[in-house]
Length: 257
Length: 149
Image (cartoon, rainbow over all chains, first blue to last red; front, side, top):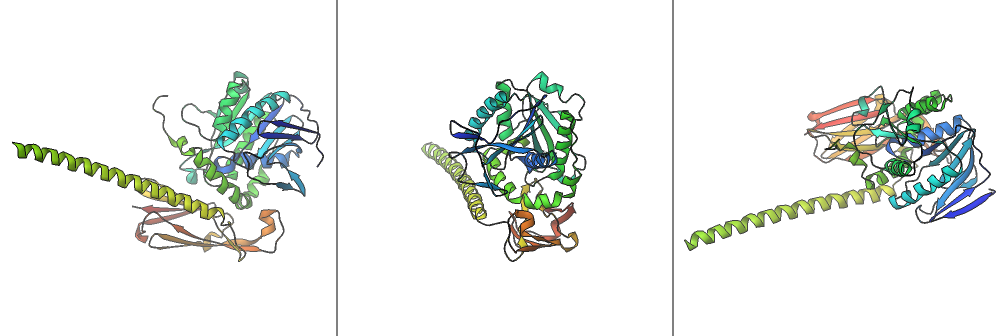
């Protein structure tokens, strides 16, 4: 693995394997393990479908357990960065503790600004108690700016009007909003505790429409059962982290709306 | 007069004593539950989701829905006709054959000779189950077990 550039930022190290040049309009997808692994499954499929290239990684000896990620015989970082055309995908299957996540959010803000990313897409799942019975899944959105809101103009998504968000995306959304970035959170109804490829397919469909790029989800649906088997360990580890982040608060009905 | 006053004081003491006892019992119950959850998690941490004999362990969740408990079990690639659920006391025994054998390399990306053919799990439930008060639904490889209280 050749290193083009290495930079220590606080407790994290950013390693680039080659220079990154994004076409416009430029998008970033941030994929962190959360509800139903919707984000992780979506990103994995997008990486494969659009044949994105791994160009960088982020590691931390403070916030990650001592793990080495090996992909096709090459040592990679726990947070992996892929790119192609006008898209940058930041992907990890590891849960970060809240203090690490706060630091990572600030690093990402700086990094995405430097790379000239115009829009940030945050796909995740929205836990619903009756997911077992649901056939048609709905996707809700939250935008941090009027420019980000423009993205959903002709897309079949519903505004998230009232309620609580908990977990990694709640934190990212707050930090991105404070930094005045154009971020769009997409929450698709899903299982909380099981990997949900169906919800991921719906989420990809929304991303595909927003970006105007065709991403076929047929293979994802066909492979759904195998993905559910493969994702069991990541799901198990994620649930522990989500419990610490009080994910159950998303079921809370707020008093004042 | 003095007797009445003492009686009033003793009554008050007994009420305070009762409240303290209830509070303590409640706190102990909560702590015990939290310790049990921690232990179960720690035990699960080093317990892989598969074994070399060819068994997979499913993901499952237990939720209290008020008048019933909802147990969801994720069984992708399970042959629904072979799903076998039995109860004994507060334990639920689950077995289900896979529609086809799956090689360890298919799900791990690593090598290995192991092939999986069945799901097996024993789930500890919060209550002793009366099998007459159980409803089971299966949909898209997920079992929902409703246990009415």
